[in-house]
Length: 329
Image (tube, rainbow, N blue to C red; front, side, top):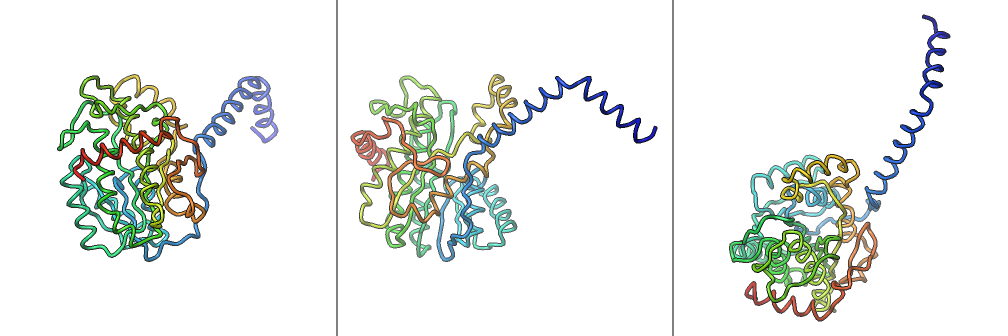
């Protein structure tokens, strides 16, 4: 078969399947466009350096926490991975060192479901570190069954909010002496469905995993907003953010259902990768244009307006006072 015959066969195939090929091409183009949209905005500033700076990232052994650590390590920062599982944290630290060439990556144990662990971690940092330039409250748990922390709190409000609330407060003096410094708290778009159940913050009377998660993410935004007010004039600024819908271990409890696994298998290509999901965290931790802003909420590397509930200053103050009592500040 010569070249002419091959080309004739190809032409005939294309003519016979023109409609199907057009549909396939259209679907392909649509998926590419949707995927690009789902990926969100990439933070393109790679020139800002963090040499001599110290960054702590909770839950940095995987997902967007690890991707954030890689980026900040590439900028020259000393990065502390604050994690519950020391084996996985050390493996992550070794990966980060190899990827970035930055050997100044440390690992310290932190279990946000234990106030004792939070206090021990903060004591270690305050005693042995000379500065803290960026604290990234990244670790979290999502839609888990009804569990309690070591101190008797519902797990999601306990880990996502109360653990980070105590940690941040215990490290404030270190942040202040290192100013200008930043506190970045990873929240979620789920905060828009959240309501603060002040009469039963632990949801002991009527537990719903989705409502508990949304409440904890709303608490993140309220905490960041109230913290900004309390830190006025100190040089410490605060930011909360929605990272996007991301394919990470955070969804492990939801993914146990057959329906969710089927849905996830279909939409997985349209969900952000951990690297894509880390971009707004990196933006809030690094971008120099944010040095004059504090207490705001961000998504896709831009300031966004959070829910009406998240803008309730009275609730922010009430949550702060209640959190102080719950963690023993």
